[in-house]
Image 1 (tube, rainbow, N blue to C red):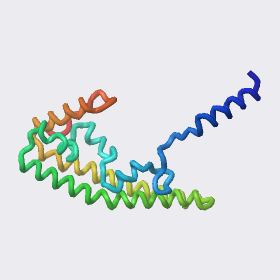
Image 2 (image 1 turned 180 degrees about the vertical axis):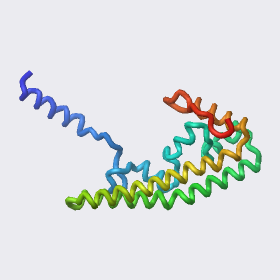
Image 3 (image 1 turned 180 degrees about the horizontal axis):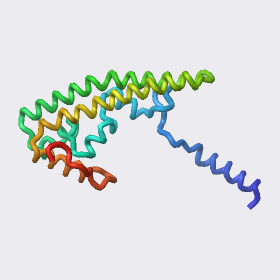
Image 4 (image 1 turned 90 degrees about the vertical axis):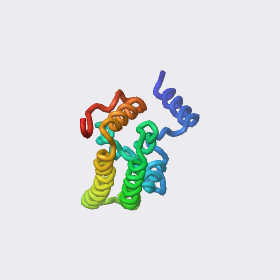
Length: 178
């Protein structure tokens, strides 16, 4: 096949299929964040920020509450876990909004001209610091949730989470008490 024929074939394919994007649809004019991520940040959702804790058997309140029947939570445990989840969400939401703003500012640097290296370094450092604080909120919440469960409940939690983890072969590690 000649170069001309290959070029024409490629053009036809692009016309038929359309451009292929490797990223999710941007949200709120922020090219670096998908609509799902923005929704999660605004809601104070985990978004995988506590994966290190969860994969090593440290229970988080969202999943514990989802498994309340399987774990046979007492009324006191249910109340404390619900309260812990509420506290985590209350701390995560403002940080999520801050991160959205930081990503918007970083995006704006590139969208409005030629940013300097110093501008980029400052904007990315700000976003990274916010995201680090957000991740810590979620991880520390797992630390606070662990003592609310018995050793047996924690073992059940790990077993159920490992079984339900799509594409993963288990969590590994032992987590608290084990």
